[in-house]
Picture (cartoon, chains in turn purple, cyan):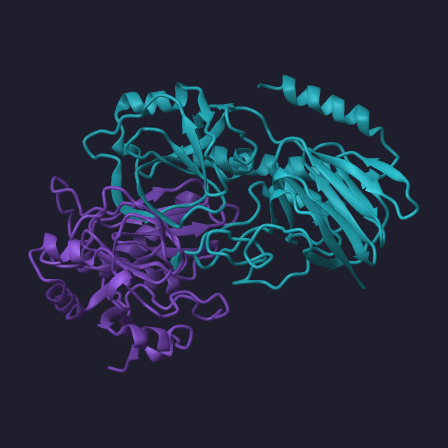
Length: 251
Length: 335
């Protein structure tokens, strides 16, 4: 699951450049720019909003990624050539509003065993752990996309002063709820899994709830997140007793 | 009316599956569903279950189950056979490609040849839907039976048996190389690697699962663009090539996004065939365009409709003869 910043030799495409690429015979990826940047992602989300409004027959669902969106379709209802033309038209349509996401303030605990990599992360940046945490807490991160696991949100962009590459050797088991960073990205693991990201805390927030059909994932692309450090006692007080509404900030 | 079944032996790698859990990929939810949807559909037809119903997927070892309440009709699709222990103590051998009646108190002990195989149940398995599907997604632990594989003592509910026993010839997929559409990152490979990918004999790896099929063969070299990409959408059939140059073909439980360059993506008509590759099996790939992919989908549908037309009341056709004829036919038509 490696996510890299754009290669330096990758020249910036023209402002609204895009390409429609086949992903087999039942999906297509609309690539705007292979880059992790808020302005590129805004374009991706605007495209997804336009796609939702267009209600193209045969289009089944779509998922935004960093610099692209993938569209799944029924090839018995719409041929790739026709779909590609429609998607290209939507991709270059000017003036589509980028929908505004919600702001969340999500608690996490960075004490002892919840944050096994915090000391090393801070050391690599020449900071005391408390100073790294304080700067981290001041960030407002954007949800770029979900993937890897149900509800696994890629949050960015971490400034260079805080970012650290992933571990050379992934851990076989990362506990559910772990808050982790890798390169310029931050994420929280809804489910236990192997992984190479560096663990800097744990959240009691329900990141994915299958019983909530309307909104099973706490975070959606375009939402913004601030992490709020809490004590161990508060972590356990919240664990299993909180929902998405508890963390949404009214603006 | 309904029936209940009790699991006496759970088998290995036996999960509830249906035709997948679409509509939540933007939230990172894998499609899931049967590795071979055509065989699950066949099992459903043999059981008298509605189209789209949930059944059992058997990957490594088959289960044994007993009708604890009411009578169920069970469809066996794939290389799975066994015996029914009748309530009167009699034992009846069961060949594959049958819809059998399991009356209250009777048990069905199954043996898997080559997986995967599928069991369909009259009326379909009655389980709550999770995000619109009954498919088990093991890695996140939801869907099916509490998101896990079958265990001894589990109880399954389904509709009551309707109609008599039926049998059918085996349903066979079209043989030949696995067809794929190049891209979306075929521009990350050297011309030699693109050539090697379609000329090489690949072997299915041992560490494959419902998420991906690992392949061993020549090392595919990436060009200066490299093996890593800014993550984009992934889907079952996508052929990722990490830095070691050994492809991984994603299957039903594929993650919804990925950060490795994809040399191509297997067409939907050939996805079911990926399910049947066991460790060490040989395979090769051939590129096709969207028109050929559409023709392959049509043929797969016609193939299934033709098979369906051959289902007959049990005893009316010589199963052993058909089984043999089809095996010979399948073996000579292009492999």
